[in-house]
Length: 237
Ligand SMILES: [Fe+2]
Image 1 (cartoon, rainbow, N blue to C red):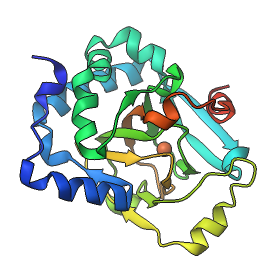
Image 2 (image 1 turned 120 degrees about the vertical axis):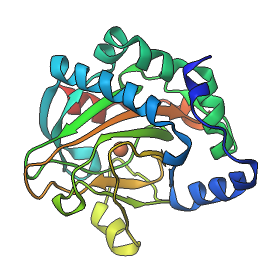
Image 3 (image 1 turned 180 degrees about the horizontal axis):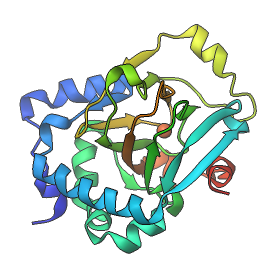
């Protein structure tokens, strides 16, 4: 059995509803399809990686209108080199096929290695992953640990928006669109349309822990697009 086969099949009668909601909201929660044992195994590996490899970042990113990244990360190479289980899960083509049922079109592994898989940990008051878009089309997010709702760290999304790296005009997007806010519990899993959904996590309002594992994917368009990786490079320099 491959790792992705641990995830329950999407019920046929729900497929169109899932696909439609994903395209409309740029977000789809799939927690009900993921068995608790799989989450528990991922959680164990993520905690072990954080204990060894977490590096703190405190930067602002010009291409997203100087929005902040105040958080810690475990980068792709540390994850792939030290967790065979997470490596197998990410590189399991069965998971791409699974996600393709939701998108209705091809889902590829991210061609830019540093973006493929990443752990983020927010813990101090004020920690946030500020407003941004992704260079690649999709992200599968595993919430390993979530603070209680009143502590912040909520996901906010504005779907169907366009990232102009030279003129990100974040505030104009906020003014012109409705913002959806999502609360998550530990063990939640969601799929995000990252390149056209402006999104952020709201700042932690006090000391609390939000840990997530993000797996990134490309569609046919972003797979071969020449992408300026300065955002990612700045976040990790
Ligand atoms: Fe993101």
